[in-house]
Amino acid sequence: MKVGMIGLGGMGRPVAECILRAGFPLVVADLRQEPVAALTAAGASSAASPARVAELSDVVIASLPSNAASEEVALGPDGVLAGASQGDVYIDTSTISPEVIRRVAERAADSGIGVLDAPVSGGIRQRRDGDLTVMVGGEAADFERAEPVLRAFGSTVVHVGGIGAGATVKLVNNLIMACNAAAAIEGVLLGVKAGLDPRIIHEVVSVSTGGSRIFDNVVGRMLDTPSAPKPGTVAAQGLHTVSKDVRLAMDLAQSNGVPVPMGAAAAQIWLAAEARGLSRHEIWSLAEVLEELTGVRVAQR
Image (tube, rainbow, N blue to C red; front, side, top):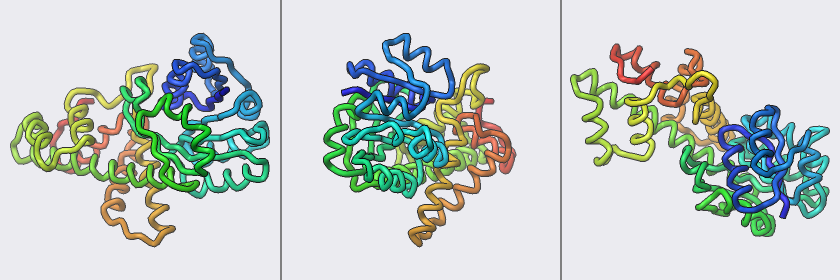
């Protein structure tokens, strides 16, 4: 099975590396030459456009930053559907609105092309080791055809429902994560303002009922690691990605008539951090906004 990968950013590049290690022939494309060159040196081939990637592949995967990018790569004049053939499967692993992938699937169905929305969840280690969680929406037959490829980078691969279900689960997950992260930072700053050592807070809460995976990650890194990426590098998880995902989740809630008061409050904090110029910093830079409100400083700069 020949695989194509479009988008070689913080998630797409390690996914592509996992696919190569699994032994699949791989063709890649990205707007930036550096990750393309690195992957071709590792054994992949390259293509100049999404359409050309699709022409050379049986399964095409995209990892992209926004709704607009996903629509352009799939539906544009030189997009995936322009080059794909009947029986091919297109997989979008991006965190996008369910409506976007449903539009793509509707167009693809006219040409007999299968479409899956398969957003992923996991940190740097999980990306590197092929240990991601993959939540897949789409037709069962398309899922079965693409599953061997999905398992090249996902240790937990779950078919969650029809097209758009994967995107929906991912937005629910990321809304919960964003609320938890904001609450974790808020709680630590409250404790520091009241005279506690932040490392003691981290030690105690991590093994108590307030603990969570996001608490351990965000608070632990906040205490030890500067939020600004080193020159020439990018954040492992930029704050702008969380802010974008929260906005998409709020749109989903509005379209379904569901009140999400905790999500709405968290959304304002993440937007405030973006407005402060922290978009490209790590997500624990959110602490800087709350530090200004509380008058204490905890986060590494």
